[in-house]
Image (cartoon, rainbow, N blue to C red):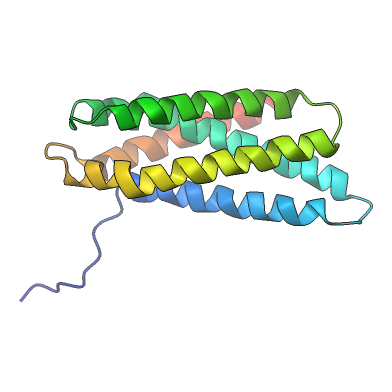
Length: 164
């Protein structure tokens, strides 16, 4: 008798959602630092913002290179993917501004916080709509895609950290 409580194998959506949870923790830590009076708070905020930007840059790239194109061929409502790509473009603009900033001031904090709000919105849409449609789509091997996403993510992280 099969066990009906058995969890599904980790798939592309679970990998992407793990990224979402990880970056959400970083945004929360950043926000806590905005209230800190510690002498090294500005330095810690800069490092955390850089880490957030790296994670989001890699995450967006693997979605755009692998996940979204596969979904475009498997689901009929591609307007959700169009919206997701527009959201990525807005996030990339803020990421570029954060990375180019020379000072960690109130404007810097505002940019990081707004980026976090954009990402929260994007994550909700992915979880509640895109992932649901991806898992329901026939012909998509999301378990195999997870391996592809993980390998590409590792490659990109190595490239970005080597360039830093």
